[in-house]
Length: 135
Figure 1 (cartoon, rainbow, N blue to C red):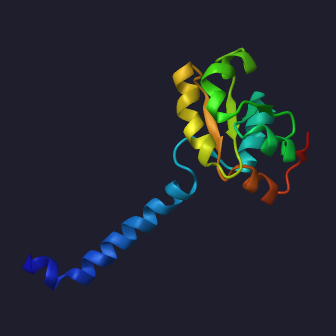
Figure 2: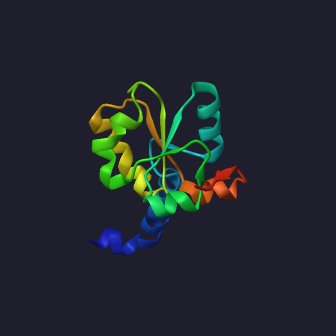
């Protein structure tokens, strides 16, 4: 205990440095998260399918061009019928990236192998000035 009290400043510096090292990983949405630019490359090079996990009203307000809408609550039931080939790369999208990050685990549970989430969701997509389609 004396060591901690005597070296509290060094411990604080070590913890903050560790936090700064982890920040890029946490800010990106964790493993399996794509930037908007990386998502476009994946769509163009590997013909990735974009699946929007937002509710239909959010989807109608604006989505990635060509995206399929499968709400998060129905993902386990309807994803296999929306995307037939389970080897197809999938990019999951929502408004901010929170729901799509959770959806990655559900898609893998259903048997999809190559699934990633768009980091920052539609907010990041619009910030990158990428095209949006409205239903």
